[in-house]
Amino acid sequence: LSWLQKARQILIHSQQQDIAARVQHWNELVNDAVRRLQSTLNLSSARHNQPVPMVPAFIFHPAMHSYTAFIGNWNGVHVTIVGGGGGNQHRTFDSYLQVAIHWLESCKYLQLAISLYRDMVTCASNYCSLLSEILFKQDSNHRSMFDRTLRYSILHQLFAATLSIATDID
Image (cartoon, rainbow, N blue to C red; front, side, top):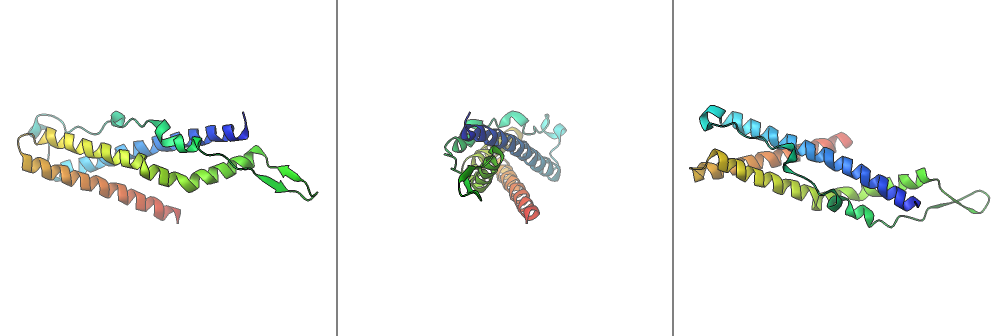
């Protein structure tokens, strides 16, 4: 395999692990928001004759390829170092890989924002509608209010986590 192909494989594998961790964390955020709202509104299992379902880990199956395709479009870089002897020396694969990792770090958040995050928010939104329907079938006003409150709570959790991560980086 060429350096480009090997670097792409490593970047894709790394990105897939990162996405899996983000999805797991997202599921935890959604479940925490549901638990908090359930507790605040005193929505017990006995009251509704069934437990309030938590979002299962499998509710969101990311099609990893769609979130890593941009890596396949990366053309690599031609990296050479001008040596002291006046000739060009090619870098090692490790230094080539470092350039690739730097490239991925510089563009992955935009790619995640336009694909993965949008899909996770859509999934959570669908879950809010489903849960609202389960809990408040007969009462459209309560169903709508619960749905919106849970959505805002989840978005608050997401932005609070994002701000926390950004603060930790600084």
